[in-house]
Length: 564
DNA sequence: GTAGGGTTAG
Image (cartoon, rainbow, N blue to C red; front, top):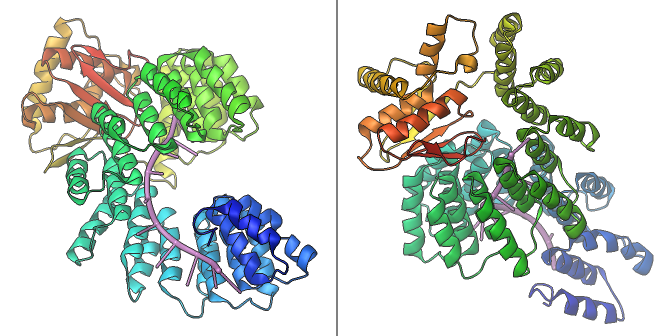
């Protein structure tokens, strides 16, 4: 009773006073620790079951231990518990098997989960849901859907597991389609869990209009007081470019937790509002809210994007010494980005060499793009050669490599890369830009010139181009990857997807409204210049969210101050 | 006395 009411100390007190303890007493206290988020205590006191009382764990104990391993994410110990369970007299228990399915699923091992799932004698909705959730959050779309369809009776939790799993693995469109199917089937969506998932999907898709509709639903259902829902809304508005609304919702929240603070700090950072992010952090600390590892990712990111190297380093150190958070690869990548962006390339390379993690492709890529930005061709080539040796799978890395070699005029390497990309196993995701006009959503791929409004778009871009040149625009063709004549290079830049999308927006969006473009890659340097020109020529605010951050173009300047 | 769904990260 004390454990389930969140009074773990009282539970421990009674437990310690028991004149005689049986397995039920033990499971009660193990569960109390699990519920109080003290799963490490659950695991550490487990051995005393033998030493103090000479008892052998039963299936109830195993289920509690597995749950503890799941919430701590300690798969190695989880496997040890699994082994003990298998050889125990309770090795057939279906509840423990379900908890193991959940453990493997949550630890990103859906195949291990499936092996256990198939051994469950009587599968109930808990086992099915755990397995489906595991596939969905690992991005195993077809496996998740197939199992979902085979499941005899689906309930709200199963739908939520599937949909939120897809949101978490970045499959926003699939999650949205499933949500609509769920509504068609008449499943009630009056539930804060499913609502927060769909808000997450809107954020994922940068679908502001959809997000606003769900926000309306939140108000109608009275879920504004739900912490999870409000946190999701703050994140959604920030990700959909409306930082001010995000801030407004944040300001009006009656209860805020570390996720609320972190969401608004990360949002400020992504919009280039570093001062605000740092101010919010001071406020957070002053009210006694403890930042977590994600908060520091946001803070260092904020510093990185405005060149506050000293402050960023200070925060990195404070994270370790003041908060006892040991830096993850994420943090090192942020640190490296902080240093390399502002030109401290040598120190950045030193971080890569001395950090206790094996640098992944993204880490090298951060350094590589800084080399290009700061014109350190020699170091760029050295790192590019090294990266090429690692045979990266991420296609965007090849684009970066091409950039380096093309910038250095090493066309032989460029064509070698192109061949690699053509024959490679991976599918290269082409650059695209997307504009959301509410009921209509248009995607433009780089170089695509076959759109129905092609002539109007071309005409508009041509007109703007002439005006830009009058104002001193010179195309920067170093962003073109192929060895071509100057004129052809300029033509390639001309059809970069963000420009086409902006032109389309100027033609179709309601006059006077902000034009919001989402791009899957980083905006190229030349397009960045062009968008600044366009914003002043047409006197419209243009917002581009690229792979990295937001750019707000207005009156010829960008919120990133050309440092991105 | 045991197992399943929600928010933040380069």
